[in-house]
Length: 366
Image: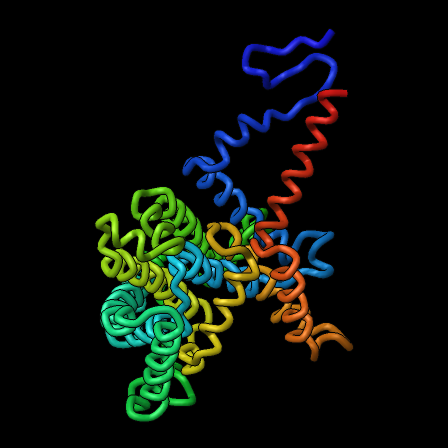
């Protein structure tokens, strides 16, 4: 006869998994913080240096790039996945933050934290201007208007402002100084720390990544996040019950742009260069693909989308025979995943979880 304790989490004779307990903790901010921290502590090693995965994995620089794009995708999901607003001009905040960071590093100081703050401030101010203009229109008109504004800024950087931006050559004078005056980001870490994380730059980016995930989780679970989702489901009904629709859409736009500014600034520190292509509309298209591929409306879905996209672009691109067709492979994966699982890669994870839950219940009942 099987005996269970009062919590129902243990049984004598058969191992059981308390899915009820899992449901209680999986959405808590504490668990998400711990899970994200564990992920970043292992990610660099697993992706670039682990004995098994390194054979088909990437390299250190790409591991950092994944985290940066993950921040961008998380922020974009606040706009598209949570609020339902499709922007094709978010490259302007990624690239704008990157240029602001690079110029600040050259003319003011190259302290990495201050450089990121400069990029955030510029992205925030730019988002206030762009949002005030673009959010006066709805649906497809909003998407096209953000695209037009983004391309306007791109061509502004290419020619009229080329003395500042470097034009097609980009800004090549980025200065990255040691953190707090003595921590060189590109200095390799000693011993086992180097095996796990390689250098200080990875840890620097990882701190922002963890903060981005926790902040996005807090926003999604807050009353603000609830209002965002109500706008996505039925904007008119939200307006009828007294919600200031424009104000909440404006705040979603601002928050999303801030995440993009952080990512763009970190990318400048990572590459020590700002390309004018960072303002081009294809950057906006890439983050749309990552977010939809990973799963709209989830914090971790866009991260999975960023991992797959960056991996295919950065690793599969170098494979013999199939390498030149990396984008064809990516679009095929995108089509299959979105067609079979509208909730994206995160939906596949959810399906796997449901299958495991069903197997566990059948095991316990047998």
